[in-house]
Length: 115
Length: 116
Image: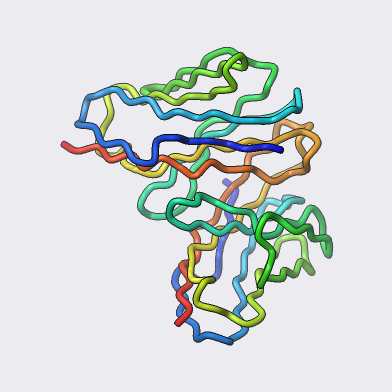
């Protein structure tokens, strides 16, 4: 069975703080993809990143960075110097090669950044 | 840019009504999905379709059906709406299957359905 766990339900930080959102996944398949999506108050999910299971390189995009560790089945997301505009619900998701085409989502982490 | 458009942003329906939620995508994607989002439960897959007239049940299909008569359109149907179907409904589409790199899903803006 496949599963995604985002243990942090809500996180509150003050602007300029760094924050890490945790994601732990479960799958027995060796080929899979991991994703992060952002859902701002407007409601539409916005794609942030995709990683395949054979690429463990960490990635940095501006203030965002992702740490993929197969040894711990984790795909954590760090926002550096957080801003109020980062306030949103963040979802981690898993797509397994042989299971079809539908994403399996975690329950989401609500990030609140105050000024 | 890929666009996924859901026909309504907000809907209020009465218990027992038949409800249609429409979703259209403009990028010729094979796959389309309906998710339901509830607080504390994240997104749960209701149904998905990988081709015209094809459909597959997701995790919570009970009380719902779907229709895909054209590639660009995927409809979610609540046969007899109930109050426990009050939720945010999100439609998504994606190109290809997992072996390709084009596996990210693009989402619509969501339809907030209230059943009274």
